[in-house]
Amino acid sequence: MFSKILIANRGEIAIRIIRACKELGIKTVAVFSEGDKNCLHVEFADEAICIGKPTPQESYLNISNIISAAEVTDSDAIHPGYGFLAENPHFAEICESCGIKFIGPTSENIKLMGDKIKAKESMRKAGLPLIPGGEEGIKTKEEVLKMAKKMGYPVMLKAKAGGGGRGMRVCHSDVRLIGALMTAQSEAKAAFGDSTIYLEKYIENPRHIEVQIIADNYGNVVHLGERDCSIQRRHQKLIEESPSPVVNTKMRKKLGEYAIRGAKHIKYTSAGTMEFLMDTKGNIYFMEMNTRIQVEHPVTEAITGIDLVKMQILLAAGEKLNIKQDDIKFDGAAIECRINAEDPDNNFIPSCGLIEFSYIPGGKDVRIDTHIYSGYKIPPFYDSLIAKLITKGENREEALNRMNRALDEFLIEPIKTTIPFCKRVINDPDFKRGNYNTSFLNKFLEGEKE
Ligand code: MV4
Image 1 (cartoon, helix red, strand yellow):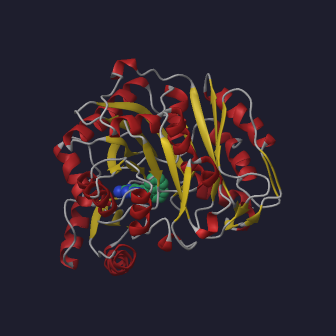
Image 2 (tube, protein in one colour):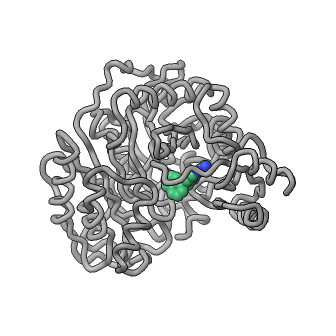
């Protein structure tokens, strides 16, 4: 087992990982930027090292400073959390070559899934259902028109190195397709340094359903059910829940089998998530795979009782999975609201500065993962996520009622947060019925303007 882990992250996820380490009796090293001196992850870790100036580029993305911090503290392993370096194959490779265990999948798997065309190709070989198209990068205008004709409009252009919605374009006609191809290529080049674009059939009003898996180094893989992440704004998730209101036991089994088959095919290790789209007829298609622990992992922890971060650490240290698929029971329902320091009444502009007062809710089956406290000053350099509120119930209705009361108790003053907005969304009649898809939030926002 590891004796010391360096956490290459900040905020709530750094604290989440420190908690897992402490419970496993592993020493921790926090890294922090000059803008994060007063952060709780610095306080809670056994040691803390400053890794540079406040901007992410100069600190949490600074590979050599992080590796140096691991070496001077004699750390055995690095947990990257999510974001920053979590899905950087180069970083994972450097860790390994320095004899530091990267807590996550292999750099080969990160690289493979980072190439959205190769990812689809490997999942096709594994036998997963895919969105039509995307077999190869587009070389000529003639070629893309031919492909679009074959699959029929609407179609979608996506970046090979993409993800997170950047470089994506929906097109309804030949003329638009040609125009969009050029802009998508330059956007992809600017964002990822790779202009390669591929074409897919556009799935209208899909639900975003993802399946959590965890795999050890010996070929054992289990799935931990799905999360419905359809409530998103500009590709940022706001609310996630499990089980999905539209997934029944049979469908869950099917989704789980796909996810396990895909993971086994690439000899995946550690925690990972297979993202699927479900169309309005209930057809499911593999979309992409995330090779990290995700923001919304506590939703799965709430209904399975499994600590995913502890599990990641144990498996990275070479332990065998101590559970079989049949041991995993899905109990009740859980929902997560992301609390961002943003003003929902002002186009979600970031709201930084001093938190003069904060009260964190509690009570039965309420979980808050946060790094804020009364007197904490939110720096302007990083992601706006300041807390995750997760409630669990015997069923969806109880989880939602509990979320309502926990949101009522949650006080963060004087900055603006998404708390009141989350309250409005979860009380929407369609949301309450589980009747929503990825178009929900835009329509909801339009409705609120009137
Ligand atoms: C799609 C799609 C419809 N059809 N692909 C958005 C993020 C990126 N990972 C892929 N995304 C989408 N790909 C096809 N062929 C719709 C989306 C999409 C979406 C997906 C999941 C959750 C929210 C979304 C919001 C808008 C578009």
